[in-house]
Length: 477
Image (cartoon, rainbow, N blue to C red; front, side):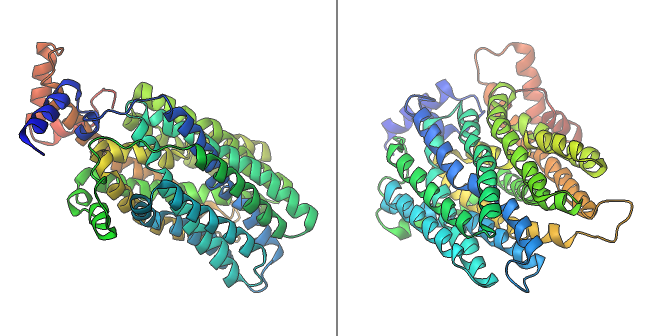
């Protein structure tokens, strides 16, 4: 960068930057709207056709467990299907980043939806547990990872101040997809007596949706993008696996938080149907619980995005985690009737998916758009490792010998405890964000003297008390 460009860059940042986001994002500020909203609708439709469809797997899992569909397979074997799917989804996003910057959005996306179709059709013909683990687990997970990885850069490039609300609305499709495909899967399974046509229907429907919406998506490339001139895969890999970004302290906090929150969410999402069956309810009643959970998510995820823009992304994330852990410890453990289970599913879904809604804004706000592929690839690698074993742990923790509690009692305690730890991890993250924001606001002309002095004291003083004041300081962030 020449001297003139450096001066222009610093002046641009000085005029607009308030410490809430990464300063690099102010050099070529996203429009916060325009065609970005079309892209938001498209990403939501793609989420409907990918992870939304996967949200209905709880129905299929309950069918597998109840009918011994693959003779001799254990509960752990069935749980490994969704574990492998989740692991390869999150773990392969870095591969998607390399393909995206080397070959472009559409070639990468076409590769992803081709894999998705092959995975669904292949799984429908699987005759052994190993074959369905390889197709519906590994291959489908790879396809989701490439699709999500390609889409992960779309909305951050179009939105800055409205990034959380756009991300929240893009997740509307996840809840609606889970609800829709839970009903479709259950109906096809009931009609045909097995899972095969349910998988084929998913493959055909979702391929059509993803293909149409892919053609409408446009990627906005910022003027200060560092990926413009990368022409070799090695150059791109070096950018994506940048240790200077990976070692960032707040990124470590976001990664650990996402790891734990995602594990808890996966257990809730895929276990509630089987939990209902373990209480003696019918398959249709169990399916309804999954449908209602996904329906609630369909409203809850956009709501989370709206609330994040009103009250701050970190603040709403912390509230959502606290809300969910209270729901688990106070409500889930003590519910005794089907009506209570219905209410629990509706209430849980409002904020249970906060990990997938908030991880992108919380990450990109720290590292900026240029550092985002590195940061999200790193975070998803660990998230993938945790969700690989999430449902396996949940099913292994079931204890049908318990008399005073349900078979899922130990699983419920495990989920609630993980939510507690994930909440605690957000406290130092918030302290770091508040300190950065206060340090920048000291240069603002609109700040009165009393606030200026207060911010100076809070950012310069050490000690536990000052740290706690920053961590819980009442500010939108």
